[in-house]
Image (cartoon, rainbow, N blue to C red; front, top):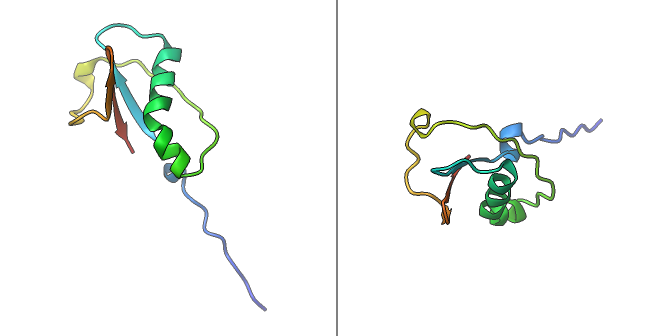
Length: 82
């Protein structure tokens, strides 16, 4: 008898965490659109076709230092935190 087991990718292999910062309040839709633009190359290379997003407002002082941002556009700045 022959058995095969398929390795399943963990949820962390299918998830990207993006921090989008702005000095002013930004509509959720705008933040999500910017995050999708920043991660497009990663999502394409991994073969992901579906995006599910959630937004959580935080104060800048509540966040750890992230280093150099991946992208800045106008007042929006994004870091990819995998």
